[in-house]
Length: 150
Image (cartoon, rainbow, N blue to C red):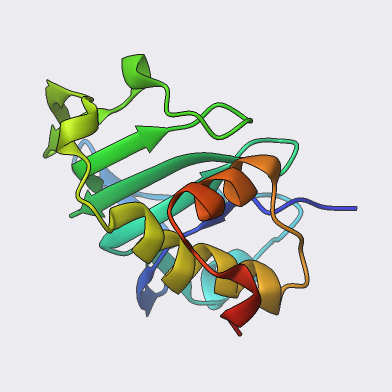
């Protein structure tokens, strides 16, 4: 039995280097032993720019974050398992640094409904995974018609 860990856009595929430079010398890079050489032969995807959703160990939505260039950039929301925003862990980031703590007025009107309706709910339906209590509450409060989403 597994859980959904995250939903995020991916960048272009690339192969990982088998060597790296250290003090002017090339040294081999160690991959995970359980994967062996296959770790370097298969494409690897860096996390892409855009909105990401991250989940807790019990499958509950915990984060909706905006990333650009591999760093937090834009709105970052942390949720309690019940669906409430944790203001102390949320805010607006620029290049990975917090520039403003979360306030309800910072949340664009349709931000949550777009993220839920365009990314979270369609992906969970495609994977045949039910909504967590957090997602169900957020969909209800943001007028996302879950039944109409394919």
